[in-house]
Image (cartoon, rainbow, N blue to C red; front, side):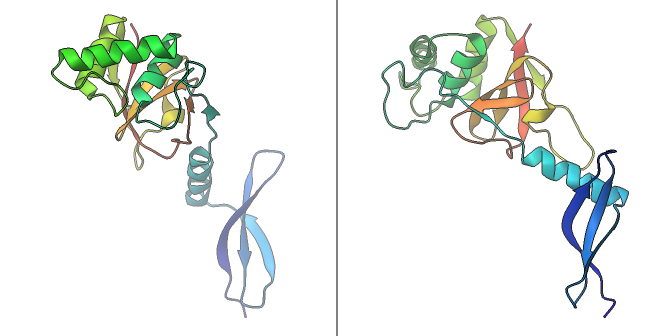
Length: 179
């Protein structure tokens, strides 16, 4: 009965070291120093489990009800310190000027969004590159940025997303930051 298997659990000691937890067919449990590969998995799990700050960017306070695909307006209001209604109107007008519907309710094309942020003095940066994984919100630089994810924009402040749902698991393609 010496068929020990890693349980995917771990113990972190006060000195910052990790032990991996193993169990066998008899139900016995013991721990052994974690390997570098196990430590890497632990760190990746922690990153994915990072919390977010619930923030609707002032949408409810502006009198908007229900749900909408307005992540661009929310992110812009939060990151630029604008009233939600002002961010929404500016994006809706830019959308109209580019030949789309005069609305920010159902999303904004990335080129329209980038054009509006450029007017505010923000510039685009590619996401940082990592070996073996994609960039996440926690990888964004210190300060306030707007990250572009798959079909989503989110304000990120000091590596923590400010949004109406937890988007920490979504990869980041790049971000806008003040010039």
